[in-house]
Length: 552
Ligand SMILES: *Cc1c(COP(=O)(O)O)cnc(C)c1O
Image 1 (cartoon, helix red, strand yellow):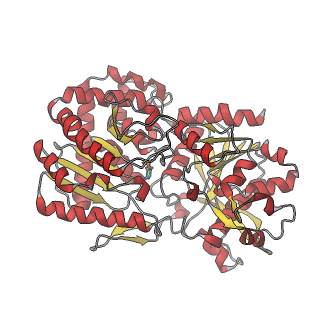
Image 2: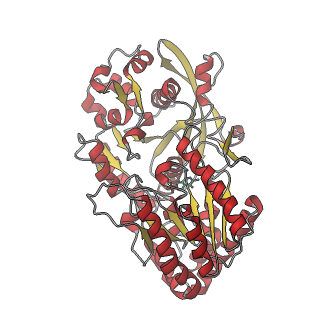
Image 3: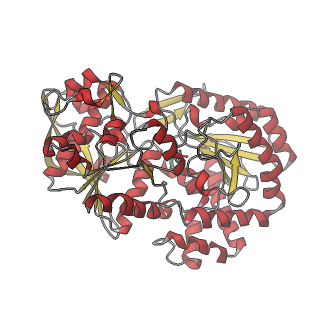
């Protein structure tokens, strides 16, 4: 049995147990693990208030609310409690279960320390995802790592592999070290996937804080785990894992720079669960023309046997749904015969969500040369990400300005990006724009979702797109294509220039004047992206490179 630990998991839009990319990936992974019958139990935390419900106020600012979701309806409470030490206090944790049913069933455990008798600050750990730092975050991670380890034992599991998916659960090695004494025995059982290419993205806590919370564990010599006075969870996970991987080839090269001690760092490129992300309208065509595409997504190369007009008509029906939705929720007056670009993901400076609005006058001129242009934005900022919030304000200001200036260029912002909004956007837009600053995108997954729906990627050469993108064949790159070893950052001005030029000289003419060639790109996208960048392929790699090697 494999124990899969993750801080967030996105299984259902109505289960507020995720924030974004990492959680959706965990959800897609568990769906594929279940489909492929891999014996896994997943461990995460329950968040009663979710991550955040986003609204934009009249000043164009993000306002955050608790999510009110009916966890009693989705999850079943188990009659089990374990003790979790926080400093010298012993507190209780219980858990809730959710079953992902497929060929193999995967049980997902949601740990919960909001139980009677616990101290108020421990009970609050299950309030919101990523809502605090310092001691609050440290304790959430103790609940996940220590509580999760003990919960598995209490439920009768004896996992042969502990998979730390991102470092939030790294404290489970403390329990393993206690049980086995020998670090080598711990390394035989632990594997680690890193997802963050920036050093500041790795959780770290001051030594004294860690010592205080772990004061009942006398087998730990925290001085050995130090990095300028702090305990870094990624380093802890790296040190005690027998196998570790990054999430794309480029991300492996970037991560080796951050973790020079890990020369054997491998990579397993992310994917998405094709059955969850391919829209029903497209899936219906696949069912007829590509039987078994759902159990074997490699067969998506069969897309070439589908008559072009059927693909285009299916896409058009989804686009109509999207446009009805955007017009309803964002009062946007979009129309279905206008080229529509989607820009949706977490809003934070390195993602440069507003890059295409850098020169609004130029964008307006471009939109007026052909039959118009529509751009739909969505995404949340972390409540303490001031840079991200400034981007949201900028997008709102530009939207207001553009509305006064022209009706050829239409720009809308859809509030509260979540799984359901994403499912419609990644299938209903014509072009999927993703322009993070390289080399900071570990992998990126939304472009994979778009590509397998026949939505054309227009993306920075970074993360997965360096492996999957073929210029002019299944999409377009933004900015100069770096060599594998080149870790230099991209230039905002140069990238914006490239976006405008490709829009005007390549993308808009193809869309408006050569529809047959456009549909070829749609098919090429489905064939090349759908057949490879799925979690079935990814999970098979995890099994063969990671899980099997550990259990041998
Ligand atoms: C896929 C997805 C993400 C991740 O998008 P990236 O472009 O890879 O950052 C975030 N949020 C939601 C709701 C998603 O579906």
